[in-house]
Length: 103
Image (cartoon, rainbow, N blue to C red):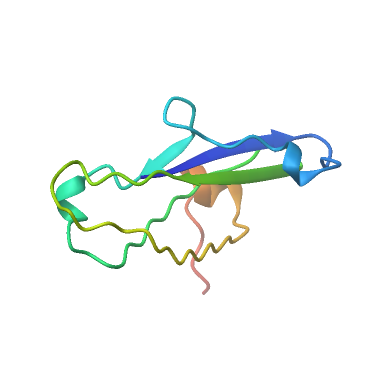
């Protein structure tokens, strides 16, 4: 399971180590809940769109390994790639405003 925690701050933190990490009880988003889709798979891609109300927004991540007793195979090696794009607020929350097409 991958857990994401969203931290919004008005000012930049002095130490990134002061940011808190998610856990099973306290998280913003999670991925990998369905064990049957993960058994014997080697690659997963998860995406989400969100918006921020503060100047500084950080997402911390925690990975919890669980095989749900379905396999003896362990997934102990991870390669993680994180990409972030800045998008318009209406793209994130669907403001209902349709863009005019060029003439």
